[in-house]
Length: 313
Image 1 (spheres, rainbow, N blue to C red):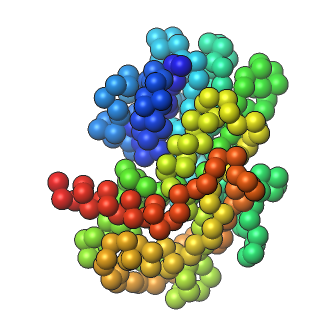
Image 2 (image 1 turned 180 degrees about the vertical axis):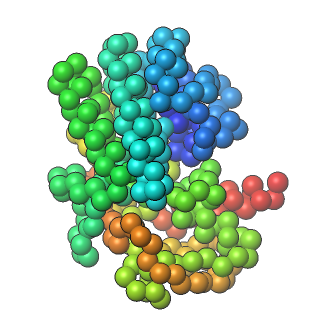
Image 3 (image 1 turned 90 degrees about the horizontal axis):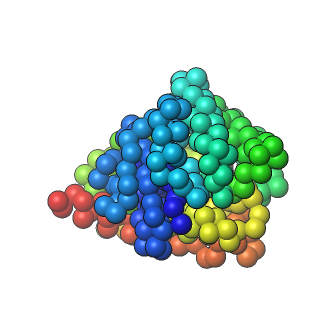
């Protein structure tokens, strides 16, 4: 199939593009390189540098490549940036995505796979609970609102235009190629600081000195597998949580990373960050339609090994 990967120079999108090519699909990557890197784009993929906010540029990509399926990974992904710049967040995540949807309809795309957020869309998940796909969304940030808005737009486009779609609600994704220089990606930030001998900070869940916020960390290979299953039409339900269902505090994460890196971390404790969800843990289903997830110890080990190798070069 001909598959368009938006955001395909980014962390998740580039892994999806790699896997699609390995599976024998023809791939085109659309990315503005605002946060992605040209070096991440696979050699055998077509590449167009363009901003999804530019409707004419998006139209040109569809006209030229004629994709059969679209996996839409391009987004403004930082919760804190969305709080500071909600208009910019909406311009990219809502208006930019509408340009994509309109072209999907015009070119009779067979399916669009949308990267939504399980980590933000459910809001606070109480201790002892895991959010299922039936848990009512409670978006608490402009970022989460923009993702939930597109889920609703997809329902509308399916009803009005017959556009088939799959929504994947990602938990906190980590792995090789994650950028440690942004405001997202705590695993990448911790790995880089740990290997450089720099202190890592545990921001409070409630009070300074506590183990920090609780998250559901999912390895990027699991996210890639979910995308391939969705692209090939093998997932019957939507939305789908892409997660492990395992709660991990920031302190527990730091300890796992110490073991993987063989380095003792210098820990610092900070105050609670404004806008942080205290606890986000998802339910993958029993059994998960995506199969078994990569265990965290293995995923962290692979991630640390990748950063070490990159550091050596």
